[in-house]
Image (cartoon, rainbow, N blue to C red; front, side, top):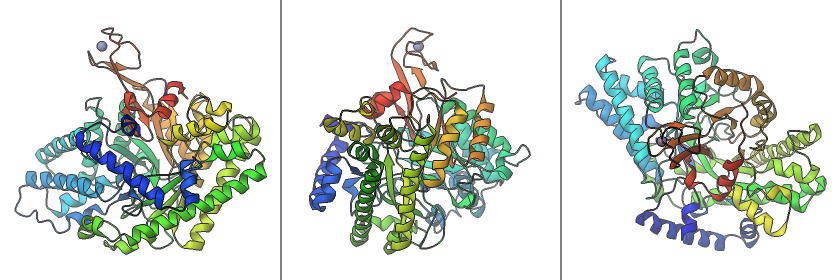
Length: 552
Ligand SMILES: [Zn+2]
């Protein structure tokens, strides 16, 4: 039973959660038994991982709701301004709790600042000093609720992503300011929600841009708390997207392109994702031609699994989606039959670095030919995905999978059959990332990872690892953001070890508290896009965290 509590660092034990977990295990078994044997074997033997198996044919993965539709028929007219503000936050809580029951993954808010501004203006909340200060109190209460509530499936907090930074109206700026200020000064044990600051030259990056002050505040918050992360709307990866229509949901999921309707993140989601164990293919096929043949055949299988899953979802009936339908949270007005055509189906991958090392004997970030091979493999996958999308008229996308659980699972399974130095470290490297112990300089990491961002249209992130919190060096963050944007990075995050003494409360980067000498230390680290307590990391991610080296 203990094993089921160790699948995800956010999970904590509870009675109801245990009953749910038992159900999950049974549901997974039933799904695997019902799948064609060939697909089932691919999953069990670790060639692929079909994520959220228990949700197969029942619910989709993640979404960015049309929040304003939820509020469209709410009547706030008899309430005071304080009453309206309180009710709107209660509305957000209701969306989060109810929508989380309709899906297996995270919830994104594409423009929290604009949503707040629109709701407050439409409902006549005056922009006064008293109202603004009450609003900040409500933001604080909301963030505390997000951090203290572990009612998602009775065992974990909600996976939430708030995108902000573009709205220049008074209330919009207040929303961005409030969320960042509250989070920056909140207790260090508060690690949620994910906040994504949308960087845009004209709106917040340039010195004379109207929200430049908020961008600086975001950098100060990141330097202290690792949050927010940065969606670079002017980078070549995103320049064809309307900045206000794109947002991150979950930890990195990017839904934008649409072969069946409007290109936008809002009111759409990712239906399902399945990840490929790239190193396994290399361990079995070190000849590059054989490698590509096997990769192709696995991608054919994965796409068939995803398509069948989307159809199963369509045929499941709509009982689970009443909340979405009633509140028109999907862009199509709540027509669940259109889930299939509007949502994305993501083919993910893990361990590109190990793969190239198995085939060439070289690290892809140290050798030009090896690097070209890495890029060619991801280009091959993207071409496959694009062809598939055109042929099937379904929104297939390529995802740089975070792989919280599979980083360890794939590696362990591979070790049984193949002894190779790449699996000695007990985890595989996240998607196309450079090895966490490479310790290469910040600019070089950006140079080498940037070309993959344009290819991974289903979502990806590049992390810059600092030795410790860059508290007084927000300029380093700003420079990195500027450089990353020039190089075509879509989404950027900054990590560093954040240690908190459980006895006296001081923080920094240490094994023994420099103030009171205690070794009772809470270690906050980023894992698969979310901050968590290192004590609860999965085996694979724990192995990874131990050897992380700084890039700056
Ligand atoms: Zn201490």
